Image (cartoon, rainbow, N blue to C red; front, side, top):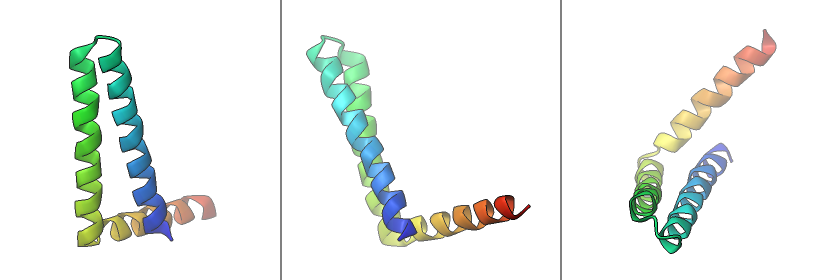
Length: 73
């Protein structure tokens, strides 16, 4: 479950970046628009690559372990 949450969070950020990029482009701001769109698609690609290699699972596991340690004291 943790990997699905992590991947979906990264993909949500990517979609937000692409949406912001489109809004910048519609407003006539080319450089920020292109940067946001490229970053959004890059994040999508990176998320897919990390998910296929199983790194999302490992990172999510380590983060949850660290959070448990901190909450316990």
